[in-house]
Image (cartoon, rainbow, N blue to C red):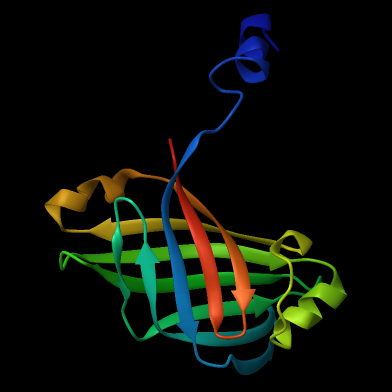
Length: 165
């Protein structure tokens, strides 16, 4: 590798990723519906019935009827495929789609699935959301990349979502 390139990667502006808190989102989810084992893994669906978004630049409510298509894989991890919409306190509508993964030691995941409270540091739970809106004041959402960390509770997850700067 060229020395100037390796310097950029090791020490320069490409060596770190900066983020800014976008919002915290709490979702209300009905009990998971188990579909069955499929060729891809064990399919189940979480039906989101509402929730709340709270942040410095965004506040609002998650609209009813979103879905979380989960796939429990043979390695014990769960992949997420979620589509939801929220309405800001100013009445703007925003769609949010995210894929994610939740994994950890088998005993920790079993406790989570029983609805027990588990230290979020005991397992890995990350998402990569994208947004879409027609609202002019929130048009900046259409052009950002975001990441999030999650914590699962019996009634649904809580995420801290960050804009990558």
